[in-house]
Amino acid sequence: MTSPLDGRPVDFPPSSALGDGRKPKNNAATGASAAGSRAIIAQMVQFYFRAPVKAFFRTRVDYMGYARAINPRVKENAPWSLKTSTPGLLAYAVKNHGWSFIPRQVLPPLLANVSVGAVLYTSYLQTLAALYEPAARSQKRVHPPPPLVYTFTAGFSAGSIQSLVAAPLDALQVRFKTSEMLEGRWKSMWHYAYDKLRTIGPQGVFAGYTLTFLKDSLGYGAFFAAFEYTKSQAYYGFLTRVYGNQSVSAVLSWKNSAPATADGKPPVIRPHYALEPAFLLLAGVSASVAQQLIQHPLTQIQNVHYNRLESLDYAAKLQRSRPSIFRLYYHAYEKTYEQCKRQARRIGGWRRWLYKDFLWNTIRQTPSTSAGLIVFELVRRRYGIGNNEVRIQQDGYDILLS
View 1 (cartoon, rainbow, N blue to C red):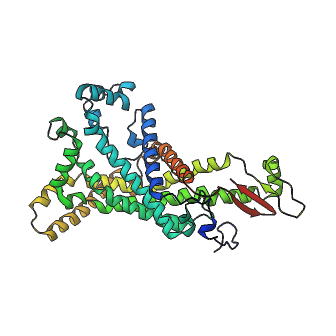
View 2: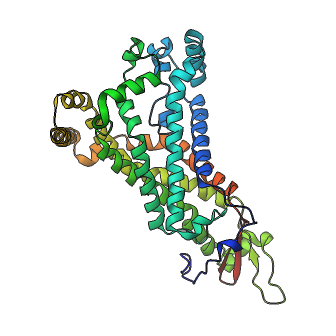
View 3: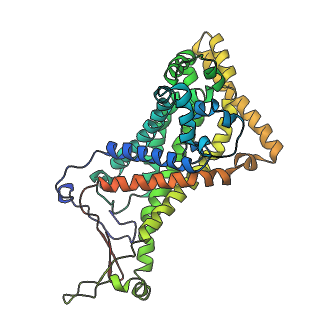
C-alpha cells in the first residue's frame, strides 16, 4: 500500500509488533466515554448561555422541555438569570415536585440522548476498523491515515445505525405536547414513552424515516470524513510542506531539531506543540460545517413533513390493510413536496428556503460539536495502545510527531 502523503510504499507491521503488550481497549468503551463527555460539555455550555442545549449539541429528545413548561419565569419570557438556566429550572422543579422529578422527567430523555451518541461513535469506530486494517489496532495514532472513502463509508454506516436506533425517540419527540403532560395524562416520561409507542405502532415510529435516514447517514458521513481528513491528511500535508522546506523549517523549529549524525542519519524535527491542537480544533469546525451543509436543508423538509404526522396517525388507524397504510405514507411524501415547493416559491427559490438561517444555526452548533470531537479524539488516544510517535520523512528531514 502507498502512503497518502507522498506516494511511497508503506508496509504495515504485524499487530503483534505494535503496542506495549497490553490488550487493545474495546472501541465500545471509547464511544460511550466520548458520547457521555460530549453530553456533559453541552450541559456546561448551557449553564452559561440561555439558549437551549439543543442549540449547541443536537439532542434527539429535549430533556428540559417539561422543566421549562412548568417554570413561571419561562412562561413570562423573563430575561436571562440563574433561575432560568438549567440548574435554576431543575431547582424550581425539584422544589415544587420533589426529587422524583429528575428520575421521572429528566433522566429518561437524557439517558436516551447519551445512548444514541454512544451507538454513533461506537459504530463508527467498529466500521472503520473493519474497512481499514490499521484502525483495528487501537493505536494512539493511526498512520497512514485512513483514506477519505473509508471515513465517509464508516460515518455513513454509523449514521444509518443511529437513525434506526433513534427512530422511536424521534417519533416521541415530534409528538410530545407539554400541555398533555401538564394535564396529568402521563405520570412520567417513562409512562409517556410506553403509552405513545403502543398507540402509534411500528408504522408511526417509522413515519418519515426516509428523511431521517438520509439526514443521518449522509450528514455523519460528511461529518467524520471532514474531521478525519482535516485532523490527519491536512495536518500531515501541512507539516511536510512547511517543515520539509529546509529554509522554513530552520526558522520555525531550529530549537527542536537535531543536527545530522555522523552516520548520516537525517536530522529530526519536532513541530511546534500548538500545531496539532489547532488542526484538531479546525477539524471539529470543518466537520460541523460539512454536516450542516447536508442536514440543514433536509431538516427544513423534515419539519414540514412532521407537521403532518398527527393527521397521518389518525388516518393510519382507519386503514385496515398494510398496503393501504404504505400507500398513505407514500402520498404523504408527495404532499410534503408540494407544500415545500409552495414555501420555496414564496421565499424566492429552493436554495434560499432550504438554507434559511443556515449561518446562525451552524454558528450555534459548532462550539459543542468541536468540543465533542476533541473529547472523542482524546479518549481514543487515551485508551490506545503503543507509543504515540510517527515519523514522516521529507526532504532529508525526519518529522517526529509525539
